[in-house]
Length: 96
Image (cartoon, rainbow, N blue to C red):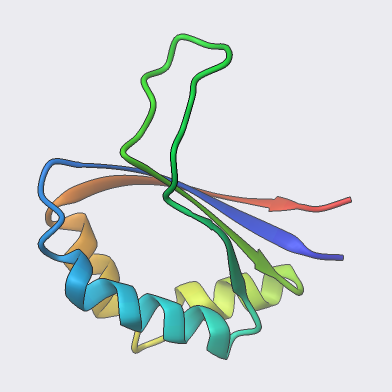
């Protein structure tokens, strides 16, 4: 069963993204993941919460692959880089 990771990112400065993006993509793919959504136009249909700057949706084959990606030693410094300039809500959810 596929497992999805939903990221809701808020940032004022995206200068870190140039370094972060290629490493994040490489490590996602290394662990069997793929991007389904990476930014794009958004429109709020319901709710009161403010839209983030970016929404990302990743698909992985299973929860173990998600954790292996998030704990990947090559990805860890990118998490720190991103956290220094942005706020990310990251949620893992099982598919149907």
